[in-house]
Length: 97
Image 1 (tube, rainbow, N blue to C red):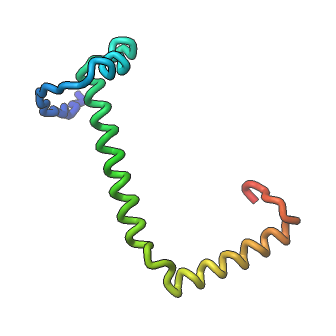
Image 2 (image 1 turned 180 degrees about the vertical axis):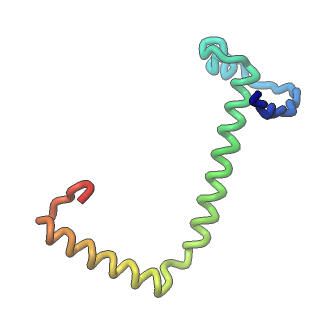
């Protein structure tokens, strides 16, 4: 007999006020989902965007000082290598090759 783990998720009931026009525009009924699911998905997307914005901010901050010597050397070697590849292929990009 195979037993499956059942994951329970705690739910929080909340009340929100939004403009009626926005509520109609969202049209949960037309999408075939419940209002609760609509709001949960919208909040999940909001959180994901905020996380991405924070990650981008941190990346920009980490690279704000430009390239260090090792990165400049790597970039120069990559440019030379890329130039050689283009010469060898007659300046044509060939996928997988």
